[in-house]
Amino acid sequence: MSTAVKEPFQTLKERHLLALLVHQLAHAQFDQANQQLTHRLWEEVACLELDPDRVIHLLHSGEDVDNDTALCAEDVRHELGLAEQRVQKRGGWQHSGLLAHVQDWIQQRSR
Image (cartoon, rainbow, N blue to C red):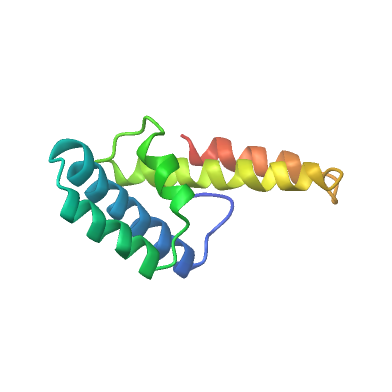
């Protein structure tokens, strides 16, 4: 899949690790009701300093937790949505055309 914007390797690595943890958490917490494993996985999220809100969002996003690609794409959409909200709170996009560029990028990623 080619995109107009390439993410740095570290960002991709973190995003895929997040998707893996969401997959494991969903099965431990919802399928197996395994409190010990669930607790250990949440500790892993904390140790890796991942934002627990991202994990919670992906767990409840409606995306298939077994689909790494879908989870990563949803995480990108969610982060871009949060970034857009922060920018709008500061008074709008600073550079003309930036919003259109981000919207094009989201559309390409969701294909």
